[in-house]
Image (tube, rainbow, N blue to C red; front, side):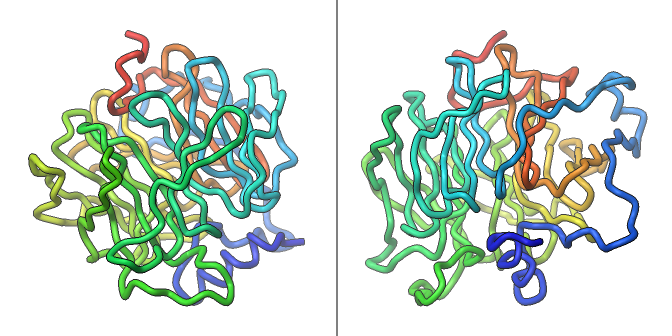
Length: 325
């Protein structure tokens, strides 16, 4: 049976696209893990006998994976309304109970920042579960439902604000779905309104490009980044058309390859927009992030479970100089 979050997201597919893939139909073959290469370069990322490990299951709908250097993963459960610490051995500790948490990041000081859809806000969460609202308005109007947030190369936070999780019964106050920059001084700057439903986002390692998903159009957009964080020359980077998934979470490795959730699992693109292959997942996949001490492991949030997959590459995390060399 579909959960409340699953049903809401499937309705969003029909009306304005969504984050959750279409449910498997009766009689269909269950989805299986597979590394599907579209180019020989795909095998530079994985051993051909690489195994997908399930870290934990029993979630409602997982999102927002963020590795903490203290040795655990923050993970959101949008259905059970919890933000938790997940340890590599599967142990789970609840940090905060809050309605519909979503994407998360660590700020430049290593503090957890997450999007809170029901609050329509960006919040910073302390280890004891107390939180502070960093921003919930632009130009005097409430955000729609902030979805994903990342640390930028300039130390600011960048986030997307689609209407995918706009709380039921509440009105959209801003007449667009934007991408924003939140400065250390609390200032909020609108960067672009050209996407229909902006979702996951990631900077290139040199900070000169910003990639942003448009979930409704099922495409990845690319922008040049100016000195003050302004976005220029928006253009198509890649399409992820198909069923059983949409563009959502996104990360890059140190060489600038782009890992994006999409139909079937996680699509891998080189910096020139060539689709190198896909990590086919047993569950619909919402997000991913780099983890473990060397940042060579992908932690993947997929519906009711969290998985990990060892890679041959190293993840890139803006501003985190403590990343293992």
